[in-house]
Image (cartoon, rainbow, N blue to C red; front, side, top):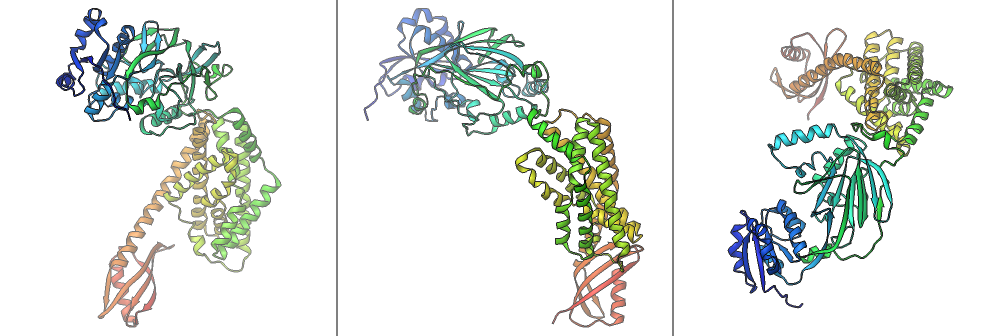
Length: 635
């Protein structure tokens, strides 16, 4: 490897913060004679000293860099940038290290290469310029005069009032792009900039082209996702984000229909319309080998236009000068396909009635047989989920026909299920309750949570053809028909406590699914607002209403759990016989609280022992108990 050569003489331009580097630079070990001068003096006397400058090392604040580079370009001297170690952004952009000796060596090399500059009138774009608004990430482009909190609140206000505006862009080759966006970012380089974090721009500071990035979110949620990618992710992707489009050309004529100014890095502004042009090989600079590897010279004159993610000129009127909705709009094609399916799902047909009858009878036999497998089979056959999802879309879109058809279909299915299961219970020669039945007569807030997440999963599954087959799995998770079958069995037994408990579980599932599905469809963009506000409000009121008994039941469940744990942790000694509670279950019977115990003992218990044990257990409770026990002897 050839040894590097260094400039014989150079100027060191510094400011107040970097004054501490003067001795370090002047006393360099590369035999370069250094003339140190403050940036203010340099600018003031540039006319007198311009002819004497061959190379300048600059260590100044980032906001002063554009003005200095403009001087270097006009006076045609090379530049080596020497950031302070605290100037992380400059170090990152130039791919420099935290080794100041190494950085000084690079800045003094006599091997400067030329980079392109972007020009707007007399103003040079050192890094980027913005037309429009990029709330939460673009605020550093304006001069900060307030506290960070005030600036954040200002940005938040702009975020919620974000609008798209119409842009007209013409490339050097005459290609005209008419689109809409919240902002255009004019880039000179993005080596380590925010935009480079989320996708690969395939850009070089020596490619002879300007890059325009157009930001056009279709919803505030899309914008949040974009901002999150900018701020928190560092791996670039070759896939263009949905809210982004970009163009590359030697020049651009840009006009915006709302913004009147272009804002530069240093806070300076220029009027619109504006013409940006590239100045190829405008400025000679020193940089690291990694920097030049990333910014290799490119000679292609081909323009790049990637705007498939942006609104075209036929769609602009839908977006321009309107606040961006919080939720995105679904495409017309996707909405049309789903809407046709859901409208058909709301209609009553013979298949629905037959499947409702079969699934209810299958669930009922499974409940009598205490067979979980049979009950799961009934859930797979049950068709009740489809009209519920249709009802959710009808409420969202205020489609009265779909709402009425769905309600009627649900009502008919529920009535058929109750009738079939009650008749079966009435006909069968015995009346007993199984554990599967008991599991469905005391719904709690946990069941409401299951219903809500099942509603989200149902709406999401129905929205995408490729995963619509997963709706059967959702039906298993929420179990609509088994509670109906238990409610019908309760009617057949004339046990209205069983009926109301099981029907409450079904009704909880129904309103939870509808409410969650409505909101999920809204998030997926099928409507920016819930149009049937009265219907949605009614569902919400019903949900709040059922929450009270569910909360009480949940509270009782927690109480039973605590009592059972207390019994399991308690040690009983009856007539010098040690008794361990291996397992305890506490539940409410029809007239009194029932305690079911499994006991471990070493000696047999007589009637007197059991009576004393009962008294000891009774003392732990405030009400009369019905106690059952099962003994296991420890040998």
